[in-house]
Length: 148
Image 1: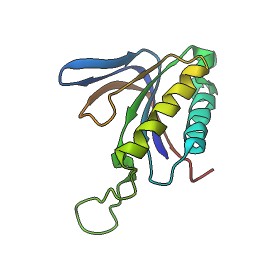
Image 2 (image 1 turned 135 degrees about the vertical axis):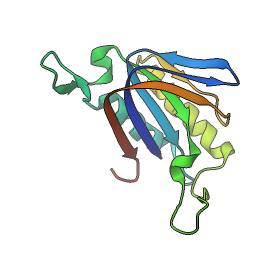
Image 3 (image 1 turned 90 degrees about the horizontal axis):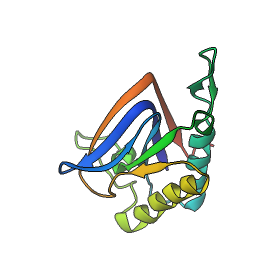
C-alpha cells in the first residue's frame, strides 16, 4: 500500500461539482492499494500517518503528531500511485488492486482512523475527483507498507 501524505492548512475534494469532503488543518492522504495488500498494510499506513511528528510545536520544530494539533484527515483513493513506468510511455497499472479488492482496504483505513478519534473525510472511491489543497510547508511524505 502506498500513500502520499501532504500536510495542509485546508483541503477539499469534489466530483462533478459536488463537495465530497473538506478539512481544515491536517493531512491529505492519497492512497494507492496494491494487489497483495491486506488489512495489515492499511493498519501500518494508518498508524504511521497518525503518529508522524510533522506538525510544528511552539518553537516551530516539526515535533507534533496529528492528534496533538487536533488535525483532520482527508483520504482520497489514487490507484495511479502503483504506476509502472519502466517501459514504454504509457504507465501500466497492473500492480494496483482491482476495485473489488481495493475498496474494502480503503474503507478499512478510513474506519481505523475514525476509530482512533480522528475526524476523517474522504473522496468517492473510483470517481474522477478534483482535490484542492493548500500544502503547508510544503510538507509531503511518501509511505509504502512494503518499506517497513
